[in-house]
Length: 366
Image (cartoon, rainbow, N blue to C red):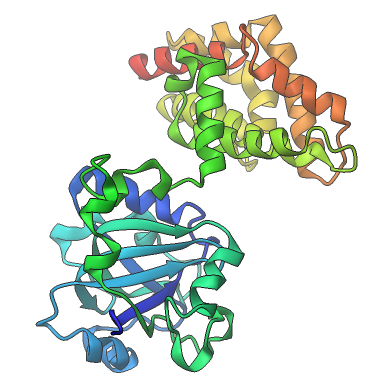
């Protein structure tokens, strides 16, 4: 007996939001629901036009259908979304906007979008795969039967997504017995967002950094863990370019220093002109740090000035910015420099500590 039924398969583009799954899961955990949009490039379409364009969706999802599954992939990961409502067209009811990620409402750079064309109300999210081979195996083995283009989601033509597939039922995929009492819904589970190796990396880093780990932004923790996976896996392979093990670490430092220390200070004091037209990167933050810190001290915000005046920390920042620039611009970084950078980050006197202290004080002041 075939226990599958008609479901939908869609793709999401990491160019528009690289952490698409995470931002949806965060809202879902907070509110018990989140809206997932099918984005497309073209002229904005209303409800009637969307029903015509996605007639195959309307056919399998009449108003009487209570629940279904939307499989979502970026051609690497694969997740199942438990959906209990579909809205056709660009507009989401005003009272529901707070339950959808912000990137859906950003003004596009040109007239062809991307625009939302369909909205799916999601009540749960479950991870099925985190690597491309396992994702494709779901189609190759017909766990999810993609019909006319078989096991290969790359072979869909003419922007047909979401496409109709035959897949496991909602009851089977989201069987609460599979939770093992570890959460209310599958979205509560850490493995919904991270593969096992990243989860292990998070635990290792938490043990190494102690209370500092909990003071990092969640984005910073993700960046650090992803780089730590690469570092641990390849630091003993002499032929592997370890430069890539700095990428996430640099993004973590940039998140803490630029996004949560320098940027809010600059905005609060209205001194954006200090940077001119230069974007606020890690390099720019280091370059203009003294000027921003001095203006902050004049305004009574001393935490940034104290951070900038910390000679040990500033020497580390200069070294780290140089490493970041080399690794980001295809300059191979010597293995010893990469290992030294990680040793510094995870030392008892980690340079993350002064930043986190300054961040807390600035948040209290501003």
